[in-house]
Amino acid sequence: MRVVQYAAICIFAGLIVWKGLLPAFSQLDTDFPNYYTSSRLLLDGKDLSRLYDDRWFQEQMSSYGISQEGKFSPFPPVTAFLMAPVAVFDPLTALRVWTVLNILVLGALIVILSAITGNDWRWSSLLVLGSGIALINNFRMGQWYLALLLLMAGGWYLYQRKHFLASGILFGIGAAFKYFPVLFLGVFLLQKEWRGAIALAATVALVYGAGILALGWQLHYEFFTQVLRPHVGGNIQDPFSANLESWNSLLRKFFVYDPLLNASPILHSNEVFVFMLSLVIAAAVGAACWALYRSRLNTGPRPEHEDLQAALIMLTGMLLLPASATYHFLLLILPVGLFLRRADFRNIWEKILVITYLTIGFLPYRFFRVFEGKQYLTVLAFPRLWVMTVMFIAGCCYVASLSRRSVRPDAVFV
Image (cartoon, rainbow, N blue to C red; front, side):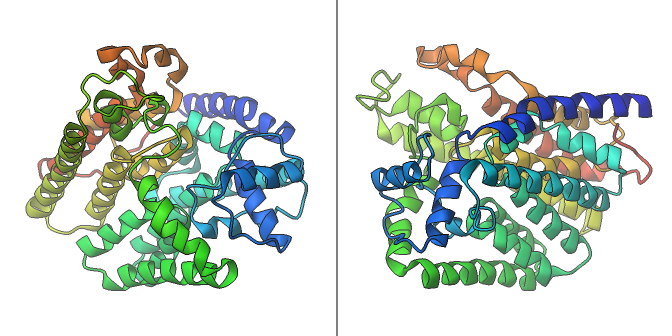
């Protein structure tokens, strides 16, 4: 069996080096120039009050020799801090340095996942490398999501060891830059760990306070009043695009008219869009609450079940993302690892979780784009959304079935 593991690790790693690492060392792609430019402007002492002015931001990118199109919106203002350590270099050198740092983060993540799950490095390596396209694009685009995942994994490692204050701080640092770790506030509240909840909220407040001191209140006011709400609502760039692979974008495609971006919806009704989106959110949250209630009612609080409950909360958040990109699905690594840490694959839900995870990681999405805009066939242009929905249902059923199975400490995930 170890031969199979080593072979799979080599194949996955080779693919990621070929499609992700090599391009990152040779050329600038999208995303990284946006992070780099904001941090370089900060280091150069420029006036950052116009960060959300797309035309001005594009001019600044060009002044640094970057030919790609970009903009700072919808990032929080504190995003300008992220690439400051590497922005002292020219853009391509900065990307290469950031890629090396990302490789180190990858190694640290595998170590922490092994500690969290109690499995060896081969198991954790397969889990991480099995994210496929998400990991490839994180490297190629110079994204920050691998570092975010490390913060989340580190936070959960500390949570498992009852260091709730330190755990909340790590989650709070991540949540200040990317909103997803805010979900751990729900985990703390579910377990009545008030110290962790307070630490998470206070850390976000402190980071934003530092941002206001360094970048000015006006920029933050613009973010909170003009940028945050459309971003959380998925109304960014082209909110109708199948590339966003979300319930928000699918339902907009069906029910919201736009003369340029969506001239032929199936039914033009903003009210139906709001109703259907609310129904999806209510159904997902309701299903997750049902599963969490069943698990606590039938088993009581147990440390291993806290892992599964946290995994389901994260999975719910992933399903309801208002807009998603491939690299966002790196964040599936932690919940899937928690679900499968003691899997023996005699349970149908464990099998479905593995199949859906690998499908999201390696499905060739470009072949489905031909269905976009073809009325009812448009649903076929959202394959990742449907696979994610199946994964969510499997996760709910898995957690709800805790009382009908035992978690074997000796089971190993291959």
